[in-house]
Amino acid sequence: MEPAILIITLACGMLVSRIGLPPLIGYLVAGFVLFLFGIDESSLPLLEQLAELGVTLLLFAIGLKLDIRSLFKAEVWAGSSLHLMGSIIFLVPLLKLLGLLGLEQLSGLAFNQLTLLAFALSFSSTIFAVKVLEDKGDMQSLYGRVAIGILIMQDIFAVAFLTISKGDIPSIWALGLLLLPFAKPLIYKAFDKVGHGELLVLFGLVMALVVGAGLFELVGLKPDLGALIIGILLAGHAKSSELAKSLFYFKELFLVAFFLTVGLNGLPSFADIGLAALLVLIVPVKIVLFLYLLTHFRLRSRTSLMTSFNLGNYSEFGLIVAAVATSKGWLPGQWLVILAVALSLSFLFAAPLNAASARLYQKFQSRLQKLERHPLHPEDRQIPVGNPRFLILGMGRIGSGAYDELANQFDGEILGIEHKQDLVDFHRQQGRNVVQGDASDTDFWEKLDRAPNLELVLLAMPHHAGNQFAVEQLKRLDYQGKLSAIVQYSEDAQSLKAAGVHSVFNLYEAAGAGFVEHVVCELKSGKQHEADIAVETQEITG
Image 1 (tube, rainbow, N blue to C red):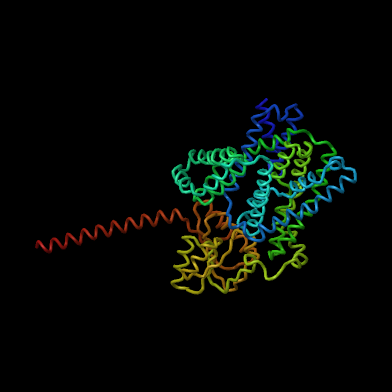
Image 2 (image 1 turned 30 degrees about the horizontal axis):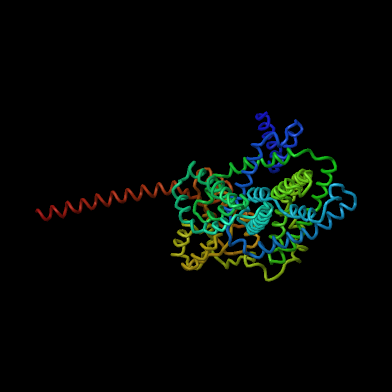
């Protein structure tokens, strides 16, 4: 039967992907289909083990990407905390009312069970949000960073619940885990030595499953918490993002098993589907609450709306919480299925909403701006550019080199744009005129002041997609000056020229030409030096 499981799962995932939804909905459907064929969770113990591995690696990956400093921003930690409390305060009476009105799934639930349900429904989907942000190219946008920060805070709340749910008193040896930061230099040395191939993947699995999950379980703590903390410990290493990418498909594959096990818990009844659809009608309340809170923290209405739409769904972490609750007997087993259906339906609601987010903002802009509080958030104000003649997008090595060459002739007429604040600070210390902004972000172009005398824009960002996007935005703003770009591949040069870029500089070709020119000059100077020595020798001997 194992081949059939793989084929059905693949087919359902592909069908769902074809209509633009996350494949995980297909995996949930595949679980229901397999249940129809008489397969249940108890007959596939390996699947349950793989599901646990998927959750563990998910938390490890979250830890690897976690910038602790981002969580201390008020709009992230306070926004997520207040939204959690507000959701519970709103949902518990509502669910109780629905039970009193005769919904049998809710009528017999106690207050603590309703609170647990409200807690599970308060989360938003990390998988869905990241997919939407990546598809739009907005991962580094302000609204994208705020959304990811809130999602990480929600994940931490979930991990705290999972840890408490274990119910056991930790061993006295758990105090020894406080020494883990002192082992960081040794762990980093090992990290340096594993290279970039299969040893890197194996190192990641050992750190997540043995040092993290295994060690924490050994001292009576939740294994998932261990994976998260070890991930955070490794997050500062230069290869942490590479490790996250290396483990990505392991994590995704094991999470498929988790979603399958949810579907294998049983088929939803018509009443369950109706209740799930009713729960989806609550999603707009989540969106409005996020919108109100984020504008309260002085974010622009556009930033707040885009973030709120990105978080307007239910979460796979809500399913994980429900899975633990049903396994402990805290909730009836049918609730895992109901929440799985609600999750799927919320994605069906959220996908077109996110696709139309820019149009919706334009339509209701005047009303939404009334929610704004001034002065605006420092990162969400208009970007002052002055009146430069030259604009450089991307102030890495190439951009800063171009800036310095231009400064020899046009000092005071150049502006650099860079999205990394530490790099902006460095350039300012060096006397360069640089402001913080991400030209691959739609927000940047919305906040950018106009420069009427701009003559030339240099596209020096490291990724072709960012340069291409910048060209599109400049054309939308009716920019009439010259455009020049740095590219790495010939096909990128062709697409940029087709988009209207006047001159394209191929980095590798130019580097090769420059290298040969340098070598030839060295050879010529060497031969000239030898000739000079020969002449001097002849003069001496003569």
